[in-house]
Image (cartoon, rainbow, N blue to C red; front, top):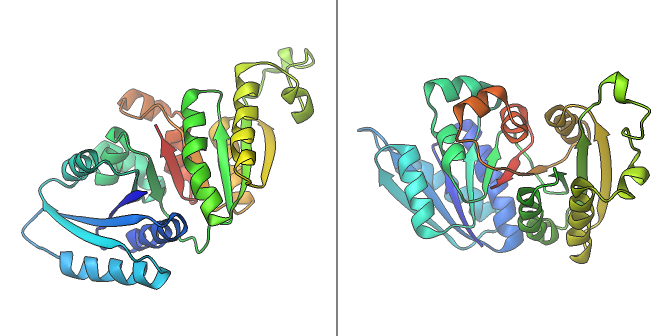
Length: 268
């Protein structure tokens, strides 16, 4: 696996470096640490030194650095596309995400436009023990499960597959639409099929897997489950977030990334 880690020297970015190092060690990846110099001040030397210490301390051996000049988001996107990385890692400032979207932010613009799987890190995580896979019945969700299953297996992590059924209006309850997990798994709906396929993918790789069903607003249920049960990584399939109107209205992936303290892996 080839991993591109974007480094800017911030405190939040160190959390991203450390979590990227955990993944790189687990999957035995080749790592490139990228810093883009946007103005006249070049702090790349110190930023690269810090990054190298983080990766070497974690036991990652194959590391190189790359310095580019120009607008950061443009350079990151071009470099990722040209070099065909398997994963790109960026840091996020969490709830400031909406304001950053309105006024411009490197991480936001990269997340919007990149086609490569992207890992968004905010808070510090010391291990990768528990991963939550969020399914929604789409091909994007299955792509995410297949991609992240390799990370889960390599890290020896346990997996939880969460499917959220949007809460129904009271008038529709009692018509067999508020299933329990056992009832849901007996259905033949696209959502149920996707959930069972996700479980099969993980179990065939020998990953200890639990399936959970929840009712409510999908983004809120994902956040409650992830942070209430101390997961180390959230895996989401995404159709992309390039539409400003969609972002402002809030699709599941964008809302989870915006508010989550848990690292989020988006696979488009």
